[in-house]
Amino acid sequence: ALSGIDGAALRFAFDLMTKETCAEGCCLHIEPVAPAGKCNACGNKFEIKKYTFVCPMCDGRNITLLDGDQIVLSEIEVEMSEALCPN
Image (cartoon, rainbow, N blue to C red; front, side, top):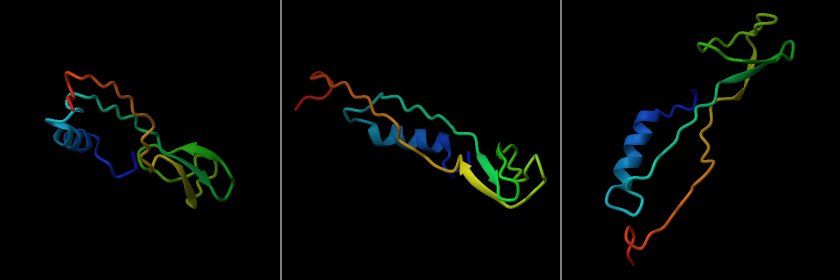
């Protein structure tokens, strides 16, 4: 959500880069992570909704972002076939 990565653009680039390779036709699954923050005033941890960086407990605005600004490659699954990828 806050990683700055556009899922549609990433899929387009992935499809373009895998075209006419052994990876052509592979699926790219993107799982967005909801932004989460911690209020530095009261310590409350909460989900950030609609880009509102305000603590729902104390209305504090000194927030540390805990989650949602990263992109992580969590898994690659490969099945090779001689028909698809001849040496």
